Amino acid sequence: QVQLVESGGGSVQAGGSLRLSCVKSGVTAISSYCMGWFRQAPGKEREQVASINSEGTTNYADSVKGRFTVSRDNAKNTRYLQMNSLNPEDSAMYYCAASWGQCKTTTMPAEDFAYWGQGTQVTVSS
Image (tube, rainbow, N blue to C red; front, side, top):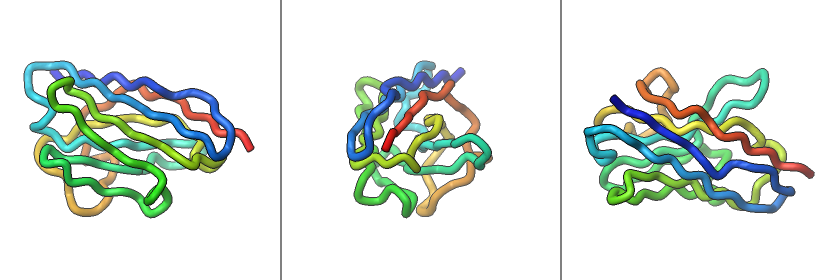
């Protein structure tokens, strides 16, 4: 069984930063999964913002390139999403998700991920 727990969300002003964490529990090592970060704002579809595979290869949505960085700590079964230069359009519920195997080289749809965390809210005020 795979369980994912996000933390690190909160409220910041535009231009600020937050770091989200996603801890995986379960028998299988986190390195066996493609880990994705998604977000969903009210009335909008869930969209992938970043992904990282076991080898550290990353992929980002165009909207966050240069501002967000995804990283890993396999020993802690944890993935991180560092978010800098936040703007109000980044406000959303953020989720981490796991998909068995390697990430695709492009952004992946939510349907590709079988396991999800409960989400953490990010609110950016202008």
